[in-house]
Length: 480
Image (tube, rainbow, N blue to C red):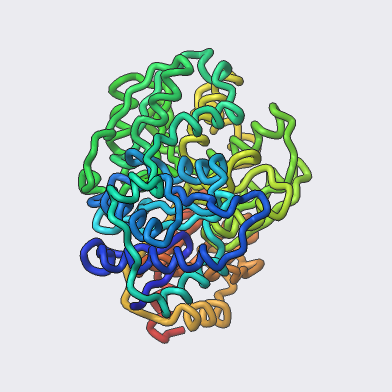
């Protein structure tokens, strides 16, 4: 069986490759890996495995199937009572001294997909070396050992619990709810039918905000959209903010590890600005310091802020697992990526859209300014930056060969800008002389070629994207 873990787990189409049979085989491989993996010093010999699931079709049943296999291997399981966000599961791993976490989710992928995210004992996504060992176990795994669900419950091998109280208690150490609630903002939350439903609404209501939640009912088809908090899927949130005269709209993806926002006029505010605004707030207001980690596809605004504050800056390939590795090895203040996965020191080393939404409103309350005003201030300080991405469905091609050709035959200029450096850490990134950039990168989780750009005007962004698409097509077709 050809199952591979990508940048954040294994994802596949439900009923095609993502079947109960295959899920049980993967669960057995994880059980074999956990049995052989050395335990951390703080973990007991019977440390549990935390399991959660999202709102996708059959997610709860897949989670039970995984639990049955782990119980059949004499592993103790703590299974969520209901759908819940991935960052909540990750924090539960740490809070309950678990040896691992498993989340049934395909995150922001289309509704026909499901997946398995594996978390290590820190709550971070399993590293490449850890998932490689799981894949090695897959190649030699025997028939899954299973225990009947009711029997495992009665034997105490499976326990059901609500992880929200643990998470809510922890989140109050990272966010000042008193500050957050003092302006009594009118907020629209949009979990996009995903596992974040109810979370932001509950916390913001407890803090004193007036909250309207949209798209919070159970809908495994996600209303026909991809549950990804990017502009093209957030028109319902933009309309709700305008219609209800709200101060801000907050969106989370299918498993709530990503954030997107809308200002009081209904304008989309992308994660680049959320990352930059939060970094500035942590340093200027909270007086926090430490290294900053960003992926190769994330805004140059972070570079400028790190330079301004004299903070060490690390750039990684796309995928929060790379950020998590650095956060566990270094004194990192903040880490994030362009897709909206962002976290701060003191939290689990993984993206958390709920946390970032709360911090946005806290900083609005501290400054007494709208999100629109804060974005305008940042632009006045750092200059104008605009960003866009195009995703191209492709036929199979050699990623290695494409990257080699993009480097070897790199143009000297694009859209009238001079190429001053080339970064091949993940795909190929052309950096231009005005801090604009273009990145051409094959996806690690889908048959997609992603083309990203950031530039000083919207028109220049689109021109760079168009030239990037043409360049990648020519390179894949063997042209120069």
